[in-house]
Image (cartoon, rainbow, N blue to C red; front, side, top):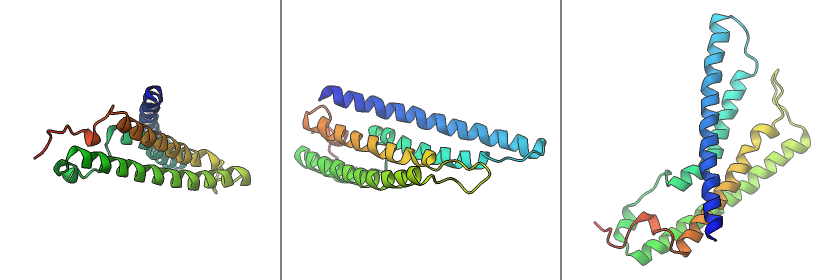
Length: 172
């Protein structure tokens, strides 16, 4: 189980790197678009869509990394006032709720991706990008997020991680 936890954490870190790469690519394309439009007076066909889809992909691909770092919105007042057992129960409930959310979203976005793939959907622009490409980061991100929540639950169960990162003596 330790190998699984380490592998999922490595995969979540890789998602963070990919998300940063997508953000950097979007910034570079925006700069290129400014030069093309305003200085060279050339048209930009694919740039706006690329930037939009890159930012959306970075959001979905980056979610497992955010969950790994506990970078999401977190209210830590309740765990501070609970004992260690209460913290553990609350951590299991939070991870299970996150897992259920990720699985529901995985199912929904996978169905959307499949429809786009099977139906040959394309964007209604000159670029005519096949929509399965920008839709793919959604189910991928949620699948890896689900794995991250499973790894979190396993780490709690094995005692490899403290609930909410709080030691028993951490109390106000």
